[in-house]
Image 1 (tube, helix red, strand yellow):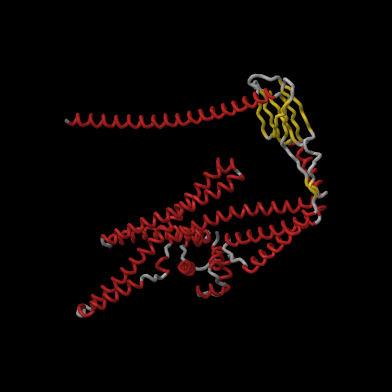
Image 2 (cartoon, rainbow, N blue to C red):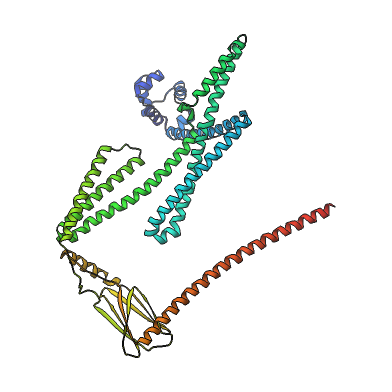
Length: 508
């Protein structure tokens, strides 16, 4: 970095023109211009004067980048100020306790313990409410992801935040409640002592006046000067809390960005239902109203993050407009739905059917998932099972040793066909049923039906008993582990006692 470039940086950082800098240095503007262009160099006395005026040494001015030097100095200065303020805080606290009487110390300790418990309970209550809300929101939407990862991360973040915020609040209350009060009273007492030294001859006459003066000053301490409560150390903690709050707001903003993009996607997809008339218009207006509200929330969050004052009037007007559009859209949607026809006999329901015949066994049973089933008495000796399902679903029948297991679910390959059919029906203003579950009909004699029901009950009872035994085994395993830990602790205590006895015997 050349001297000429450093001179330009110094002059611009201090908002000086070439004429103003030349006046400070006692030279002409042309001389400063030549220095900055590199056509000439200032004399040594002018270099020393520049270093003195702007707090640089010759090596920094001639060989280094003064902008980097200034940033380094500023950063070092801030760190030193925070450290100095922190140690001053500790020193003042120790001085205060040293000058306090026993009753005052006891009162201060009890009051601060009470304040600590109160702050702890407040953050504990906030954490419990937040955990309840998070469990009902994230635990429902992202169950596995929340309980196996996100919850632990959120708990760790909240614990760190609670420690920092609680400590900040606790120290701030302690400062304004005791430390600032102590400093003011201490200054008043010192002033009164100076008065006593200067007026030794009138000490007895002014003694009562000085006491009244001090007491009045102590009473005025209740209304404190805000300057006495300022602390770079506490301000740093407050800034850290503010940074954490902004981080939470940024995460919340990302969520609203996602919803904004999703609403834009829904606005485009709504064009698929353009034939529905009023329903389409109402849906489009509702999405636009939600987009306006979402945009306003994003703007408020952005203004908070960048510390910019938002326009309250415009925000209020936009919210009011979104509410009006929402009301109109809901009305149009209701009018549109009034023109829809409900089709009870859906031709698409249960168009597929499979039939299975099994020989009746002593332990024959069956199990179904996503299926509605019913028994039908017949005179046949075997068991006939008929599974009815839609063309958009799949049914799986597994033969087991003791019976069968039936599972019905959606067919991923035919999901697009189902979506197309739903869109077509909605545009035709029809509401139909598109069931995924299957209907299972079990044909058997009365005796066989009773036997199957009995076997099903036994199977359920056996599964419950197995689960109960598993739980009991887990409990026993935990008890054994606890007892083993207790035994290990007792063994360690016995070994310690033996070592102690051995030491006493050697001493004797």
